[in-house]
Length: 209
Image (cartoon, rainbow, N blue to C red; front, side, top):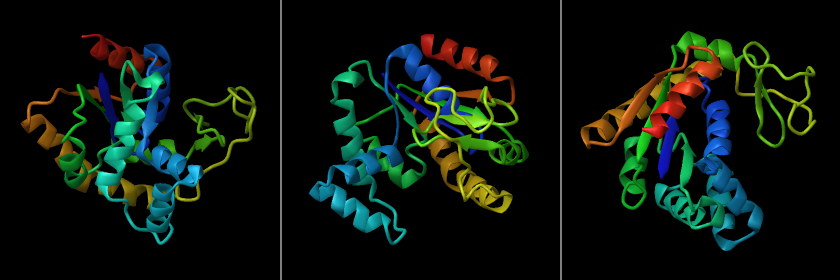
């Protein structure tokens, strides 16, 4: 099974995806994670990716599709993958769907104002575990519950930066979601303004059907 979990910034994709992965026994992966992993291997492909990313350029979707294909072939992905926010636009969709078609696309819906509010309070540890000081705080302030590492906030999560990213979501990702629906893919929209537990129960119910 291939599950695509998408939605605007601040909709809770990381929180819900990690929980869903643990529940279903499937990896929760992002394109960024796969790119970083490949760079860390020191491979020729990793060096190519690094040479693209370092100047701030976009990695071609053909390369990312190949990384997803390889990730799906690993033993821990025998039951499938939960993909975090990829593809993000129509060009990426055209390439990815040549051989990796999601069984279900779960869209977490929130307003822009809520996204700004949530991200303004979001912190994460070096291992990528995400906490929100307003809606999902750790037990100890500034420390990750899962691994005890220090939490920090991303530099690009000022209100202006967040609204620019939300604008790109509306301009790029929403048309892509509409195109998926036109092609007959199963797209399920979830109201992510509710409590985390309520949102998860809805997602889990959709995956079970």
